[in-house]
Image 1 (cartoon, rainbow, N blue to C red):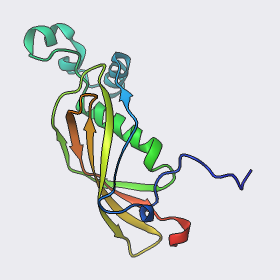
Image 2 (tube, rainbow, N blue to C red):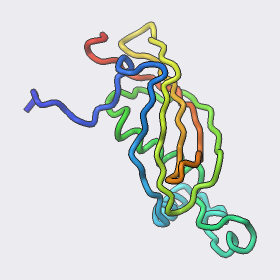
Image 3 (cartoon, rainbow, N blue to C red):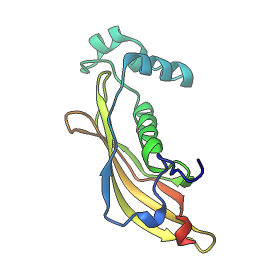
Length: 157
């Protein structure tokens, strides 16, 4: 069994190129997702917990999803496909919310590799990407630019 390749392992830094682009699968955000996130994090802002307030006091049409939740779910989509066993550290990011997300929206992440800088120690590099979270209509919800430390492939050692 040890000769069988393992599927689901993320990109090694040396398998990426500056300018490379890819996108994740989609994920529909449901009302139970919102309720669970709000409860787990204590984000009990009325924008996320009071539908009467939303209807009567705002111009939003639908149940809002916290921006932090949209980001976390996007990171989950990326974890599943791009950094299992290859991501070493999340170091920093710039983060901008561009538009609202609502229950029932299906999000995906469009990724562009913008920087790869090999470190002086070990088989690793700093990799920066521009991650754009979009909904099913193609509307941009969030743009963030994580800097991560990534492993290299065994061949790059």
